[in-house]
Image (tube, rainbow, N blue to C red):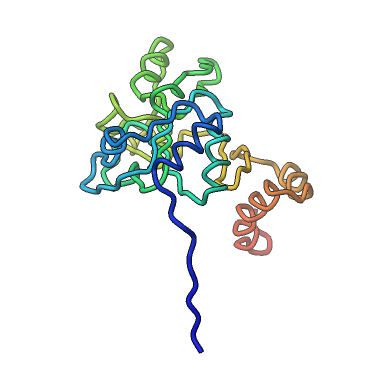
Length: 224
């Protein structure tokens, strides 16, 4: 005996665009020209997206994720599109953070830290830091166009990374949101903070426990 089953119907660009536009997701564009523009990055790969979204505020990002999750549509985050391995192209929804989500939120020259939105271009951060005799260690050749969000995603380096470290070695903390909508901060935590977070028993607890678990399992007796 055999059975024929039908998989989920693939939504078209118009339907996804309409859903995102109704969902308070920022600037939503699903016309053919914009989709073609975002079908490529600096690599040789080509993938035509369904829609391009330009979030202006934090809530726009969360709302876009909620809509895409409900529709079962994948998301690709994009900055300057300087990726050379196709990281900035996708067949679902493109979230472009470079247009509006690109501010330097804080700069502390004493602590030598900066808080930025993911769409800020590296050179803009370098100019602000340079006024205090500082710079961000990683310096890829695309520094005039690449964004910090993309650098974090790719762990960008550059010619000075041997001396000053890759991007990952210069990031203290991240606020991230998962596809299922869980918002959490990633950074160094004490054991007490980890225990408290895990005890909460929510999605954040599950993620922190899974991230922390391998480190616990890899310890040998007497190690620190």
